[in-house]
Length: 334
Ligand SMILES: O=C(O)CCC(=O)C(=O)O
Ligand SMILES: [Fe+2]
Image (cartoon, rainbow, N blue to C red):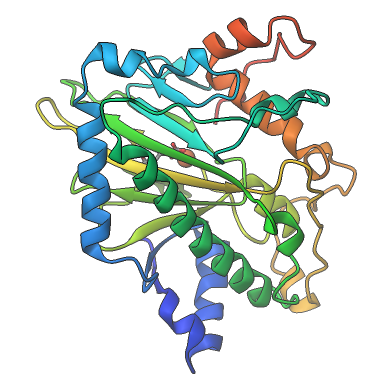
């Protein structure tokens, strides 16, 4: 068993219908697939991995100078063990950016504090332009995929456009998993919260996807991205498109693994639509239907903020202790 491989170039070809069917089945059965034909060259992907390597090779002092704990907007560097998934420390170091912007003057509702500038290391000037261009390129791929998902579910192509038009919520994470003697939690089992995630991995395996038969490896395939569905797209499609639990197991001692995860979420002020699927599709949905009153549909910004606070307790303590959000329940364990 392995994850399906889809070719996005077919979306703009005479084979569009076959592509949409395969996309629908991959998202329904696995919630995960490899994507090729996305228009970004293997060379470009490798250059981006090299940039990640250069960043993580900076000294502790250089990385600490852009530590996330400095940023009320949850941007910057998180050292090994500094992030939690389901209450447990992940064995990875990472650098997060989101939409480059200015801090909002009006900080109510509270999630507006998520908006603001990224932090950039002075000693690696190529990082800023490199990551911002990459973030936009990945965002464009996600927008095309959102149109494809809309059509695959019998909806108008632009039904999701209000979620990303103008400025979708972009979150790019550059990650390094160091090797370890015993298999450790690189990142603990979780679902991604937003709409879509694109993962690019170097040559090292470690990503695993939950299936009814147990954990399925998603080893690197050069030139591809691994795409997975987030919880909001699952809710919006009434459970048809699946948000699947996944994790990363640390590489063996002496080996590191580099990856990029790009999370595309809706605009923070968006309301997510609950789709009415054609009868043939809605019959296939198992489990309970989405409740249109679920606050996840309408409180996008608030939920992103809560998720960030659960993962980064130090940022929450330094920048949000004055708020009603300060004490959050621990995330569910999958
Ligand atoms: O590094 C990876 O391959 C995936 C990371 C991931 O699932 C996440 O950060 O949400
Ligand atoms: Fe993830």
